[in-house]
Image (cartoon, rainbow, N blue to C red; front, side, top):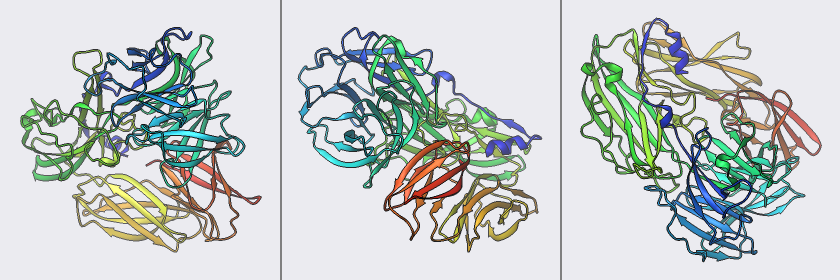
Length: 637
């Protein structure tokens, strides 16, 4: 939205600055268990591979497990973000033996000098694949019923093998895996779980609701051209690995944001992949213009809010954020700089850099500090700063663009294990740090600089959305860039054909720092509904938002689908009557290709849509031999 607005201002001169090079990009570590040669020769062990999805992929270290396991079979590994250790499991004897390997993370990366041949834990529970989430919970599959397409997903105690909780995973009809004993699991730092399961072919799934009280659902994503045994998350992509055990070792990249599977590539460093996990240092930054007050004809007082978050699964060393005000406004034009943490937004107890002046010293924090990784019970994995200054020499015909740069490392400085990560800020509040929720804040469209225009042009719409609030009402919500100094009012306009428009109501603008607004339309008609927002300035100038669409089926006896259009998900609720359990819900794209299916039993279904591109889709409901078809729109905000 901001880019579209900027391009329309062809008469204005734009100033912007970036200090983020390709060398500073996020860099996950692929952890590969197997052997040093694709032929299978060499002792069993695991390697840490840097820059794994690039032409410069390299083996950082290899740790031998020859004293722990006799060969590469019936062994898998997982990284635990809670204690920063690698867990190695051997299940060949009908029980589970687990070794803990301390690499020294996050301050250093080295194989342990000695590793005991006796396992740390031994118990009778036998897991099929396993992986830790960011809270240190360990998840595993078990008890597969290939006729029903169901298995259990267990959260079990790694020290005792006792099952803490379990629930059923339902795989979609037509896409049951051949087995769950062949494959692997990966869990993103934000909690999303993906799995590759089965062979000839292996299939890729996302597992929904595995950590909820209800049953879990496996959403089919793609069939893999070859059998794949390992999977790892790497900066917005899944690396899915395999071998034919005849000298060919390969991997595929699956882009989470675009739901695309790349062509096959040779596995990194000539190694043999059997099981994978990953260490994902990652930082995300947003920058929002919080306030701007005109002092005179060329001077303003400006305030930015800068939010920084650890998006990865490992603590970040040397965390810092740079904001170069001199590069934006000119060194001689910046004065009166004040920096503080927003109230309650520094649980990590970080210290500010008292020498920051936005000119010669652009680092906002003291060096050498650490930002922990995210868990469900802490709040020390993010912080938010407020940067205020007075700027003179401003030109009403210039848009000034500010990008704050977050940087951090893992490993020891000056050694081969030293890894840099960085992110250029995205314009907006903290919720804009990773809009598509794939764990990678550095993708195109997620590093939009923050604009400031001294001329105070008409309001800028950041997002508009319409959703069904009930079977008879719709809620229209929108957000705008602040401050809205010249703005007078919003008018919510409605149409059923995008040609004839009526005004539903007026929303006055009484607070120039208010960014979010909403309007509820009651007694909505059936069919396609369209909305747009008109903003009018105090001098009569006006601007329109983009148009958003909504479809309403119109009866309480129908299936309820909301929001429509959808961005990240659809909620699908069965009708109050005339519904025969269970019902199958199928989602098709515009070409008729089946994308996913799920069963509705006795509660509303959440259908994830974040991975699908914008467009029109078809939903089918099959219940007791009857089929109902409707259209839905996917429009990402």
